[in-house]
Length: 313
Image (cartoon, rainbow, N blue to C red):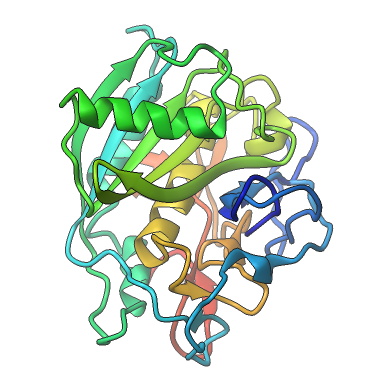
């Protein structure tokens, strides 16, 4: 859901803080805080419950259409396979299990009943999103922009990877910048949001990119449960849910002018921090499997039958 901050609106996941070890299961997504300048899509913290001005997120949009609790405003969606690229920013030692946990998720989320929810979204010609995701590249960036990574710095990290031919220039792609726990994002990570997605011109193409940080410095901000987690790594499991959130929003609203509701919330925003039916795995709560691993992943909004949050479609 949007928040005003930085020049235009970012969209992403807000926080909802709870005591460590407690699984928060709110019934509806919370609203983003007001104030500041505009920024891109962000998943806000788990404790935020203030009202803002989400409609500012989408200027000069076409007339909205739709009656499932979310509306189409004329912009593009990602068609065909959504290509994913990961930039592991900061310090990721070989002993860390996070890359394997996230890679397993990204290699298996495409074709799943969960990602199939996105096929209920379409573009102006009513061509639907495809239930297909491919992880096509992964590189490391050892603090090229320092350990304080600004919003502009995130875009610079992506642009540098493309310019140096470390990753291809792909207008059908989403470039995740995933940061280690010692990297700060001063515009509000762990205080106002858990992750965000945006787009911009890089090398003459409209490139989509996303920031998701390691929440170890404040587990109550962006982890639904801690210290327990399905894969024995609460930070990685917390990142997995945020990554899924930003992936589905980027696929259905890559330029921030396609699918969102009257409050400016994209599909995943409408179900943020809700998890549906749970089971126990490794002493923790989980709700789905990818590649043999258990995960606790936030639900997504189905654009059908009046609209509803679900784990599968």
